[in-house]
Image (tube, rainbow, N blue to C red; front, side):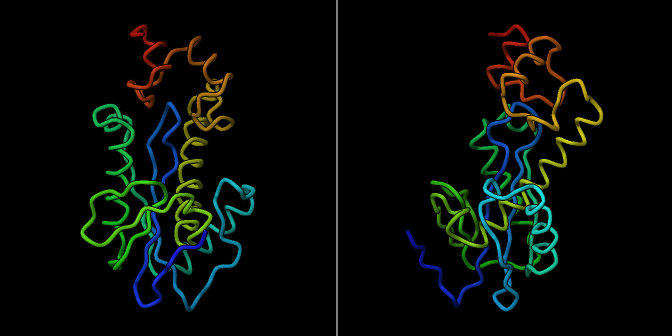
Length: 196
């Protein structure tokens, strides 16, 4: 599948990381790439090694015309639900751009309300370079936050599972209970709190 990307418009790509985890923010990024300064090797962040992601992370921040990170906190996720919180985080990322895009490509099947034209692109992180770049910024940012949380609470193993509900994580959660950084509305967390 190919995407019609108008060459005469300033395009931003937006992606999110962290809808599935039980802990931490949902993190989004918006990126406007510089057509005159291409970045080889951009791909869906999940398909890249950590080393490659980190190298591209630095290159994107250096070469992009503009980039911004947006987020929604566990409290906002609990209040709004994960879908609406993700849309809010995407709006924040686009609003944070130093340059205003004319068209925004969003990874996935729905768009947040934005003041400019937006198009949802399923599997956009593999099809649109600007979305690939956004997926890399969002993933590296969120992974670093999980590593930092791990340094404060090593017994939870966040550096390994990044907050996703792996068997190991669920066992630790059941044994130790949730930290304040957990999303209280997510079923495994409610279970650990005795609310299920």
